[in-house]
Length: 235
Image (cartoon, rainbow, N blue to C red):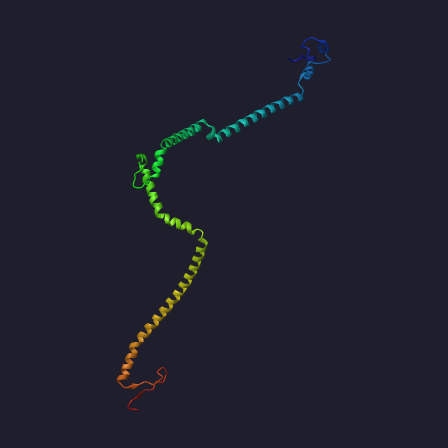
């Protein structure tokens, strides 16, 4: 309950109120001066503002806490959300039913595993036939490439040595290519010389035939500039 202001003349009559009323009536104190004295001090205004700020900060902290809880609930929704928990329970129940069926047929399954599976047909439901076709294609392709894959795996530890051998083989191949090019050039030159020689052979044979027909003897140096011709009769 608020206490009465002793400086307010309108409050319950007391000594101070009567004195102030007398001062106002005599003109010594005006009503404006009394109203000014009734205003709340500025320090109390600051206290109220501080209390409001504190309340707002507490509300902000509460909202941030709620946001963090919502984020945590979103991150862990797949663990604690009822919808996902129901799905997991359904999956576990189906697995449990399957394991129970396996345990019930344990003896027959054990006997069947002990028997060879060759030349027997495994029953497959119709909805899975198309998948089995693709599976068989993949199996055939895998079996065809199995030996190649195994050979590749075996060669992985020797990869560095194989690379060195390949580098040496490439260097030898470069040398052989260079030698082959030189040999090809020599063969072309030799063919050209052979063609020139072959073109001169008919002329040489014709000259020899002519000399033999006319009994002409050539001197022992046929490549000198002075050619001496001597007949048999001159001898």
